[in-house]
Image (cartoon, rainbow, N blue to C red):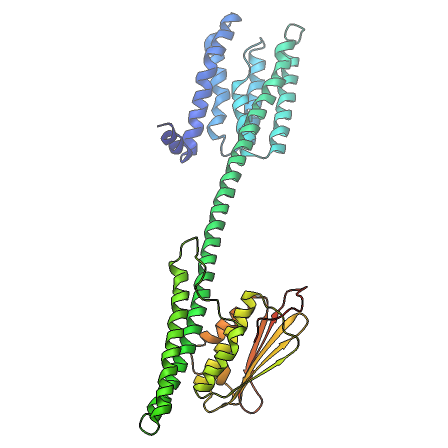
Length: 399
C-alpha cells in the first residue's frame, strides 16, 4: 500500500508538493499553537503566519532554490510581526531539505549558509537580548540540520542508483559475454563440421567417379576405389561423431576417444588426395618443433580446406604444400596450378565459408592468412601461425 501511494505521488509532483505543504502545516501547527499560548499571544495569528510560510512549498519541486528564498523572506517578515520567540521555522526546514535533495551538494550548503545567516541576523535584530540568544543561535543548527538530512538522503539515493546501475550493467555484461561465447562455440563447431564434411565428401565423390569409370574396364582398381570410399566415409563418420559429441556433452567432458587431427596425420591426408586424383607435393624446411594442440589443428585444417577447394574448383591441377618452421612462426603455404584466379585453394564458385573459416582459424591462434591468385594460373594460400616463445627444439610429432 505504501509503495502504491509513493508511486502515485511520484507520478504527480504537484500533488506531492501540496501534500508536503499540508504536512508541514499539520506537523508545525501544534508547536506554533503551544508557542502562542506560552507567549500569551493570538493562536490564530501564529497559525496564519505558519500557513503563509508554507504556501511556497507547493512548487518546491519545480523551483527549490527560489522557494527556499521565498520561505526565508516570509519567515523574516514573520519575525517582524511576531517579535516574541516562537518555534523553529518549519517551512524553512522543509524548503532547505528540498534544495538539498534536488540540487548538488555545493548549491545546497551555500543556500543553507545564506538562510542561516539571514534568519539568525534577522532574529538577533528583531529579538535582541541574552534571554533570546539560545533561540536565535538555534536557527543555525536548525537550518544546517535540514540541509544535512537532505544531503544524506540524496547521497543515499545516488548510492542506491549507482549500485542498481552497476548491477544492471554487470547483468548485461554477463549476458553479452555468454552470448559471445555461445556464438564463438557455434562458429568453432561450424568450422569443424564444414572442414570434415567438405573434405571427406569431396574425396568420396572423386573416388566414386573413379570407381564408376573403372567398374567395367578395370574391376580390380574399381574395387580399390570402393575400399577407399569405405575408409573415407568411416573416417568422416568418426570425425562427425566426435564433433557432434561436443554439442551433447555437459560441463564435464570425457576425454576424446580419438586424438584431434594434426600435422602428424598430414601424410595420410595428402595420400588420400593423391588417391582421389590430385597430385600433391609436400616440402618441409626448418627444424620442426612440438606444436601447441590448437596450432597443430589449425595448420592441419588450413591445409585440408585449401586442398579440398583445389580439388573441387581448380580442375586438372597439381598442388604443393610447404611447411616452413622459423624461429617464432610456422609458415604454411598451399598453392596449385589450376584454372587461375577465383578458383583453386581460394574456393571460387563455392559459398566462401571455407575461406572465412581459414581466416578465423588463423586469427584464433594469433596468426594471419593471405589468399589470392598466382601470376598466370593457380591460387595460393599463405598462413603464418605464431609459435610459443621459449619452445625448445625437441622431437616433433611430425612424421
